[in-house]
Length: 144
Image (cartoon, one colour):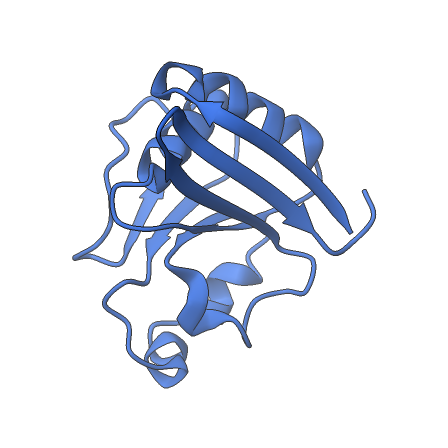
């Protein structure tokens, strides 16, 4: 298992963390983001999308559940928010596994309901709010 930790991250440092995340896990395509409301999940995903060359505005997909972005070059970035999903059956009905198997980037907020459907080698990002900023932990079960 590989673990990377960042402590006391100010919002201004999110671009640095986004770049480090993508460099640390270059072959990974499925990333989950856990944390309380307002912890910075969407903000970090915005910065990651910027690193990938996405030009359009990145917003939380709470109501549509999935937003699709086009980075520079080929490919797709799927940004999902599972906050309103109540069961794995709902995810299956939405074609969740098709997104995971697409080979494209999948950034998933509120991933808990999908735990049994996620690849074991997903990169798990946990964000918590501290008095000095954000504490961010990234972990992946597979050696990189």
